[in-house]
Image (cartoon, rainbow, N blue to C red; front, top):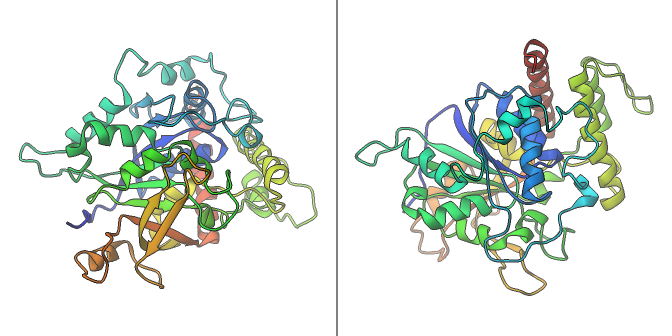
Amino acid sequence: MSFSNTAFTIKNCWLDCDPGHDDAIALLLALFLEESVNPIGVSTVNGNAPLLKTHVNASQLLALYRAPTTIPLHRGFAHPLLKADIPPPVSIHGTSGLDGVKHLPPPEHPAVQMWHDQHGPANTTVIEAFREMVESRLNPDGSVKEVVSVVITGPSTNVAAFKQKYPELYESGVIDRAVIMGGAFDIPQWTPYAEFNIATDPDALAELLTSRKVPVVLAPLNLTHQAIFDEETHAQLLAPGSSWKEGEPLPQPKSEFRESLSTMMTFFREAYITQFGFTKGPPLHDPLCVLHLAQPDSLAGRWAYLTVDTSESERNGETRATYFSDEPDQWEDQEKYIGDATHDRHPNCYVMETLDREAFMRVLLECVDRAEKVIASTPL
């Protein structure tokens, strides 16, 4: 059985996240890549910080970005499906999960409270929110009215729990892919073998990889470490058109919003210098999942059979890929592996491997420009 293939141009996107400095940039792209991405929902999960904090962070970011209030924000799972919690990466994101960012609307601001309390614990759960999202896009005969791409920039707990409770809806054709930031292959990681998002809930990724209809699109560290936010890009974020040269002080921010993003990236940069020795800038992991929807040609990859270690051993969370080709594949190329007698494992994952970094940074700065205009004309 082949994966669904769609000709829809504008991709409906549900962002499942654990903000997180790079989650904040993924949300920015989801909201302001207007010609190619249509954000239809956001949900939060335990990961970069405990759920109570990631949900506050998402609420603050949606308010900061002046997101349309028609987009629902749902509180998700506070713990992994089966495993015990692992400590959040406070050395990367701070104790709040979004430390060091200036000009965020405070949690008590009415605009933030609106997002935060929109769907509280007594209202729709994240599983039922996914159910409603899928059912509303099915015709009475079961045919699909429109598809949705689920982008997961934290642990996969929320989406896996939905698949477990409503497998027929997950496999209905409405969800056309699960784009996941996670995993790594033969490079240093959070544990000796596993990247943080996957190490947090490997059983959730394992659940999603069982699907024969909804492929995983993986943005592993091997890819995301190419997305370096360097000082030249930082200068253009602060002051578009700046003639900044290496070695000079960064220019002054042209707006409070640009200063907010600058402090976000500065905290992230310093954390990566201290924790991993990244001296040229931090890698922007999570936005590449959104970029895949908008500009898939910027992210070449290969189809693979992906597995994840769910044991209690030190290899817990390790991702392993068996590739079907030595050359880059197109997104549509999974069809040629279906039913191929030479392959006894089905293609369940498109592993993105190389990035057109210049194209990505152009997209990022264009989204900042758009957001700045919206924020300037839309008071909280």
